[in-house]
Image: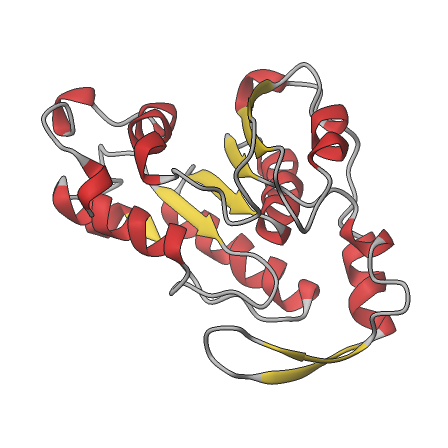
Length: 205
């Protein structure tokens, strides 16, 4: 029997992992409101085709989760949201990342696991295959951007997701400062009952 509670599928960025700060903060928040089992934070494979295949299976298992995607995970989340007609909350998302790797092929190291892998032209081609048009149904999206993002130019996402609910904050960085403070907004967008966290201060997680 399907769970009466919503679910969240968190997608980390390039060379990141479920051990990233945002993933850990979200996991801690879900545990504090007694719904740790309604969050999935998979370790994404470095190759886009394998990643999408695995995420398609996870989405079928969860039903209709809110997709929360950071950086490259935001690109994946957009593709999946359009394919499965899901809601997505994007945090400093990459836009058309296949256009950003020119001259950057070669060895890569995961910042959390230490895994070394080779970024190839096939990775870039696979990313290009996931490209979608700007969302037509903007009600299914929230996009959180910080202008101090040192990795991606926030204006690309601002333009691509125009018409969607954009939350643009001055300063910050690519990791998105103050994420814990915004967890109530994320949980509300996912569809959880506000009474679950009304008395919870997630900033001390």
